[in-house]
Image (tube, rainbow, N blue to C red; front, side):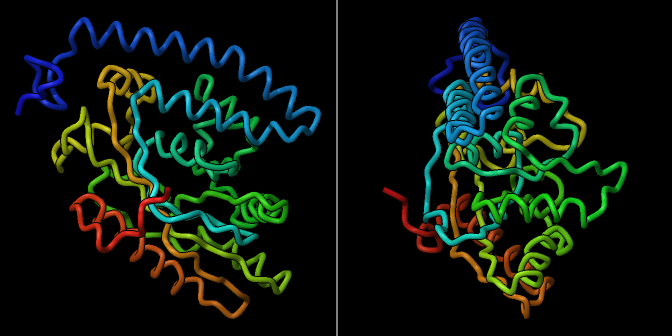
Length: 287
């Protein structure tokens, strides 16, 4: 199948043209300049406890989305209830950019992200909660950090699959990963609101991606982040649906496993509906 926007290339798999490389180089330069401005500003805001420390990462995430040509369609609304835990599916490092561009949030992320160039440093300044899977960091330590963020009124984003998928499916949610909500609810007696979120990568270069091309946007296994990001810069256009389901109250009497199963089912339902175009099964588009 030929992409009409890129004559002579196979959709999603064709060799890059000189124009692709020029475009990617231009946006790479823009990202470097943005990082040189934004990172020092975030250091200052973070050091002095300024409110801007919550907004500056959003600006950088939006610059990254613009660089890769990502167009985000938002369906539904983020809950205004607090404390809140956002539980999306996980496809790519772009998930962090999409969610981080939408609202000030804290991420629970694997420790490898802390070593990424630019992005890792920004993640640390954004006070991401890093989990070292090799050392099997204790659940209680991670839960304590998550609870601290939620008590400050900042939603925490948790990828409950524990890993990324190929973009065609939603992997089983791990009940242990939402233990922070259970701990907070039982310690304080208050209700924690857990919101299911689906991220669906529907189009590449303006055309439906399909099962065979969608993994090109995914970041799975041992794929290096830099080559993957460079390929997306050259592709130049990604369409993403960011879908907010109805928040679920989690109180001290709630069954954690039952909630995890419900969240998994709802995220899978919204993700599938977005990929297959079944708008009747999706929240309305936010205006």
